[in-house]
Length: 213
Image (cartoon, rainbow, N blue to C red; front, side, top):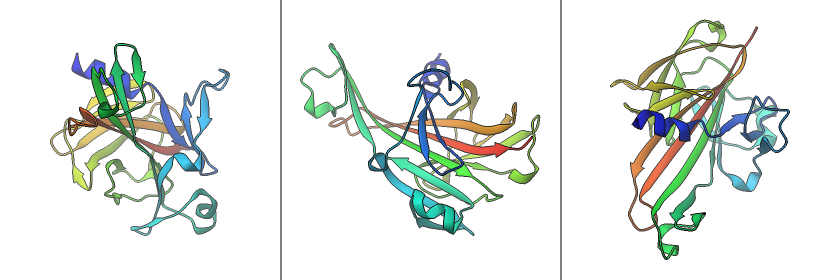
């Protein structure tokens, strides 16, 4: 029951980075639906990191295409949400008179372009242990879940809109590649909050990589 409940939160919406290094949020494979996605504005982005030859540098969408990256990692500005008898408010718990439950949401997305297994060591993160260049439909992607550079067990993962399970004691999980094109693999990890601004902190991260035909 816990896995199902948390999994439904995990697949509620998707973050992804397109081929032009722009960050989107919404429903990636529902192009025909109006308002099914929107592009993330620069002011919503907290960090835009470029990994090149195992070196992490801060960057932005305008310079990445020229400099080249093995992977890019984007974190969004965190936000507080509090459930009340009158609905959910985008405010911290200490600013609400009748709070029922509150949380801080921290979201990130990584787009992998080449064979690079170096973690960013920046919050919650998924690292592909396979060589990206050799992956094809039907193969299993071997992943490791990290939090601030340390492996993390018991983290819920989803592939697209389907919850697939948890990372093991070594932070490992295998996911079968079921379609070509851009992959969206998501993970969620919840920590205890400070009790003042929020009751819990929910970290959600997405790994993007492309499988060629």
